[in-house]
Image 1 (cartoon, rainbow, N blue to C red):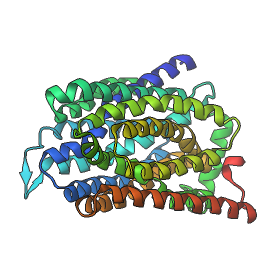
Image 2 (image 1 turned 180 degrees about the horizontal axis):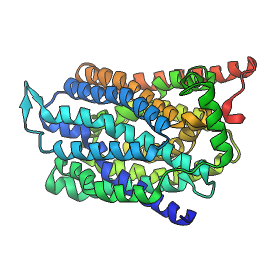
Image 3 (image 1 turned 60 degrees about the horizontal axis):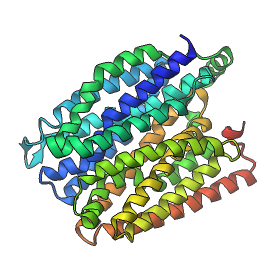
Length: 404
């Protein structure tokens, strides 16, 4: 297939995939509408984060073992579509005081959260195999798709059909995404990449030890437990803040869409800066921004401030998508790229477990603003610690894989 045709299919795949998942912005709102308390919502989101921690590495290992991230992505995608079809249909069904939708949502998220990291790994593998195909170009269309769907759902779908309606977008897009996946196909590594992978497998059957002995990757993961706090927690608790400041939690979907629009210029700017700066430098800057962002949220009492922060947060997440994802990918051995990417997703989910539990308790006791103060402090401290580990690694003479 001509690389330009493949690039177009990749862009279309990312657009449809992320557009269908705009329901991610409404998970906590949907659960609150079932009558769940703040602690219960936080516990449910923590359970989702737990399966998001446990499942992705398993699917990553399977992807590396069978040599096809595409097949594993398709499996995860169809299970997600089936689960998201049942979430709105089971919202009013109670089992022991718990909505059946929570159980379906948690189970389906094991596949939903795995699919996202597997998709990133698959796209990066294709880019490695053919440098003319660009992951960042395709991912920008993903942000655009999410933005369009989130804004449309916030302005038209949710006000007219209710929050539950957005969950039907995934099953609607299930077959189109599948057929596009078939068109994109698997990555076809060049001969040098294949030879390197064979050497790695001979040295270590799955090569998992290479990850655990990777100083820079492991120190990144440890610090990311704290710097990733907003990735899950903001999705859960920003509706609380929007309700307090603006009086209407439903606007979160529209502003999330606007935030997604800003990811595109963020990725474009990151691409320019990556030519002049190291990925680790950009990573540190993004983490520091997230720490400051949480402190601003804690002191925000006007809609203007919240909207401004959503815009800047979109740019920062664009940097995350372009630079930090590539940074994690660059630190891992090529034959373990899917495992490393899904491990990164698992770390993010593990961060979400603590963040959602803690946020639920603090929202019902001392208030949500105290939670944002705590998040900001933890992120800034973790960023400083990670900077220290980079300096220490350099002084110890430990080579960094992203510079080799």
